[in-house]
Image 1 (cartoon, rainbow, N blue to C red):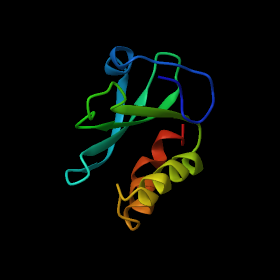
Image 2 (cartoon, one colour):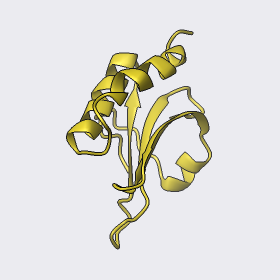
Image 3 (cartoon, rainbow, N blue to C red):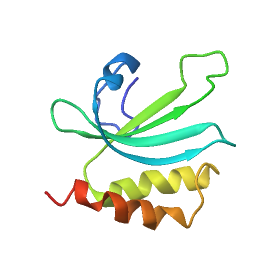
Image 4 (cartoon, rainbow, N blue to C red):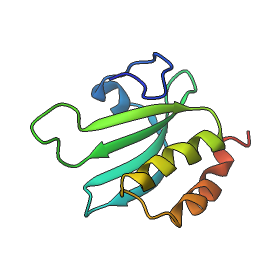
Amino acid sequence: MVDTRGSGIEYSREQIADFEKVGDLFINDKREIYAELLRDDEGHTIYFREWFTSNGGDDNFNFAIINTLDELKVELKKDVDHGDLAPGLVNKICAAMQNVWDN
């Protein structure tokens, strides 16, 4: 699958499974989705979403390469718009993940 933010970077599900987990972002059992931050071998920070059910296809995940906390906020707001995340959690998640970009 190709990065949804247009970097041109492509990963398979198997590659993603080997990346370092930076942090859990949220899980929504009702919507059957979870999201986490990962880091690949080249140091890219990856916003990874996976659905518990794939509805018969291979498209049960997507990812976005993000470079800043503001880009994380944009991705989280997409999840709010889709009903996957409560609006009040965006700032809390960003505050918890701020250290990822403080280095």
